[in-house]
Length: 81
Image (cartoon, rainbow, N blue to C red; front, side, top):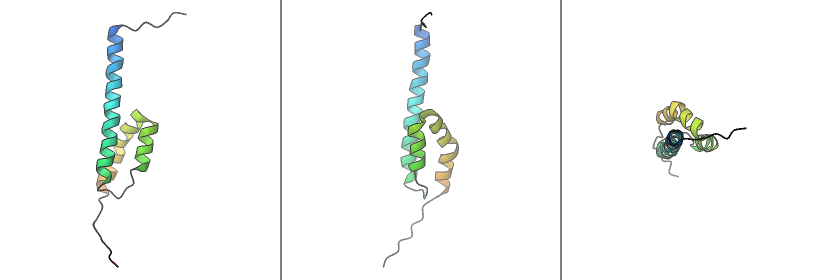
């Protein structure tokens, strides 16, 4: 069997995809924490999804979760006894 040879160009392309995946993952994590302050929805399921499946979870979060977290605004309703 022949070993796969990676040229400099192939390594640059793979490195670029890896860099974009890491940036997408970090951006999703930051966005979850930022949106969770004003949202009724718990960030735990989204965090679990993104940690277990970094690329796919980030894409799903940006497509579905971000809108859901923005739409469920927290209201200020203090109840003093």
